[in-house]
Picture (spheres, rainbow, N blue to C red):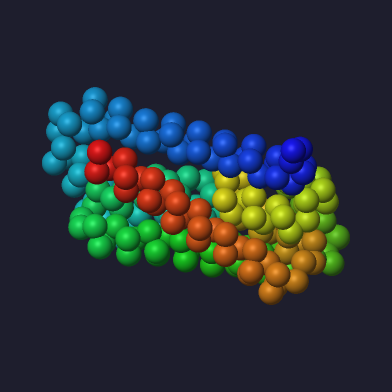
Length: 191
C-alpha cells in the first residue's frame, strides 16, 4: 500500500520531530550528568528562581517562529516541582502555543491583501509558501505535530486568507503534540 504524499510529508516530519526530541533529551541528560550533577544547587537556583522570566521567554519564542523548542520548557517544568506542577505547566505551554499560533494567524489575516506583506511572505517565508500551496490546511496539522515552524506556518496560512474556524480546528493538533511529547518526557524522567 502506497502512502499519499500528504502522509509521507507528515511521517517524514514526524520522524524529524521525534529525532529532535531524542537529541534534546540526550543533550539534557548529558548536561545533567556532566555539569549539573557537580553543582546542582547552583544550577537549579539560576534556572528555577525566575519562573516568570521562563514563561515570558516561552511566550516570546512561540510568537516569534519558535526560536526555542518547546521541549526544553517541558524539561524545565518536569524538574521544577511536583508532578501536578509539571502537568499544569504542560497545559500552560500547550495553550500558549495554540494561542500564539492563532495570534500570528490573525496578523497574517490583517496583512492578507497588502503588497508589502506579500513581498515579506515571499522572501522570509519562502520555504513554507510552496508547502502551503502543495498541502493546504494539512500543513497546519504537520506544523502542529512536528518541528516545522508553528508560528511561521500560522502566519503564512493567515496571509493566504484561510478561514479562522478551519485554522482553529486543525490547530488543535498542537495540543496533541504537547500531550504526546509531555508524556514521553515524563516517562523518560521517571526512568
